[in-house]
Length: 98
Image 1 (cartoon, one colour):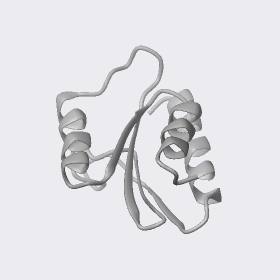
Image 2 (cartoon, rainbow, N blue to C red; image 1 turned 90 degrees about the vertical axis):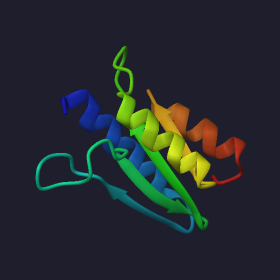
Image 3 (spheres, rainbow, N blue to C red; image 1 turned 180 degrees about the vertical axis):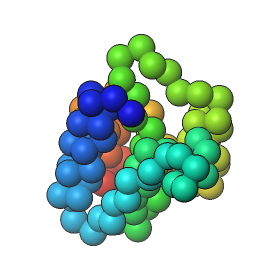
Image 4 (tube, rainbow, N blue to C red; image 1 turned 30 degrees about the vertical axis):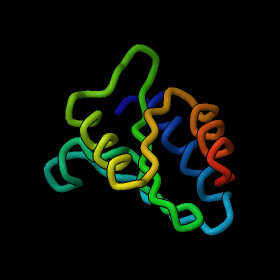
């Protein structure tokens, strides 16, 4: 993770934590961290599972990351691929969660 990615993950985490009825967890990648391709942020907002895969500029999600987000959506959760804090805010406002 680069500095820009880490900052954006942190900014999104702070925003999600500011919402009422929220629990937010940052997923740590690596051999002792999470399952491969898990979203960067998993959370529960007002009882709704929300997974956020954070990307910077032209860095698109991997096949595994796309699959994870699709699986979350299939399970009736919210899966977001975010290139900015605004992406997350817009999606949650649209869904009535912010």
